Amino acid sequence: MCLPRIIVLIAIFLFNIAVGIAPAIPKYGGTEGIYSQWGLGLKAVIMGKAFVGLADDASALCWNPAGLGLLTETEVSAFYCRPFSKASGISYQSIVMAKPLIYSLGDIPELTSSLGTIAFGVAYSRVGGLAETEPGGYTGRTFTNTDLTATFGYSKSIGKNSAFGLAFKVENFRLYDYSDSGFGFDLGFITYLLPQFKLGIKLENIHQPQITLKEESDIRPFTTWLGASYDLFGYATLSAACSLQLSGRLSGHMGGEIRPHPTLSILGGYSSDNREITAGAGFRYDFLRIRYGFGLTGYLGNTHRVELTFFL
Image 1 (cartoon, rainbow, N blue to C red):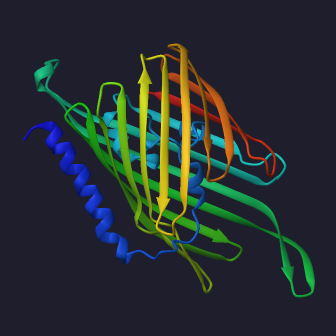
Image 2 (cartoon, rainbow, N blue to C red; image 1 turned 180 degrees about the vertical axis):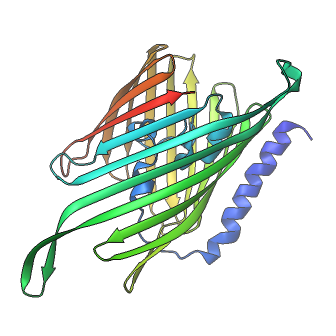
Image 3 (cartoon, rainbow, N blue to C red; image 1 turned 90 degrees about the vertical axis):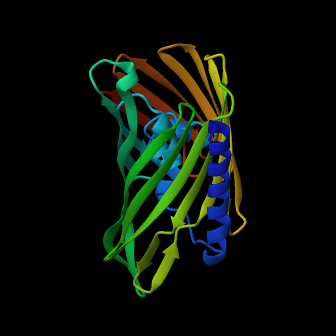
């Protein structure tokens, strides 16, 4: 069976999954968790979350696990941000590792093949100093809200230009004296339709994480993502994506990356879901890459983000 036919069959398979499970998913999926908003890496956030059709680093584990299958280097990446400069006590950090599995007999290219890529990531958010109140008013005590998400993913390439991926995640949410955990999984597919043009699809929360605190429950929404990216002669990349929830909420995302030098990249983007304009830059030297991102939120102050990545 030729590769283009395989790609078409996979796209049909993903579409049938979405159609088949749609009637069983609540029309209102609750609220997005912080993990869906910030993910596991900085590049996607700087590019306005227009990453499902690009997914070219370890953070693909969150944004489109299929992208892991096209990676050629082992990456370990740590991400930190202070979400709102005007609000103290709020932090978000993550770490992710992606490792391609290569099977080789000596140095013979014909006997070298890929067994796929595995990845693991952890994201943690903390909001401290929340005021405790009672019917009589403020008690003088404070409490903390935390959200921890662990994700494991696997992706396998199909030929040299396409890949299919799966991500399994567990979320633990804690508020005051209450906590609960829920699990979910995502499916992704990515392919080069042309040498410069890449298309990606992600079905997020096919199994929806459900968090119950005391008597209140919240279910993370099932979301379909579609995106594409286009490479301009190796010097720039344009990327766009849209996300649709069964509740009818539609969001648009766009981003770009300019590479004036092989070691330097300048990035920017816009996301309509939170109306945030983002910009940043990255610098890579040998096995080390540093990225910085800046966001104009317009609500609680600007956002500063940093990421450090090692290539092994």
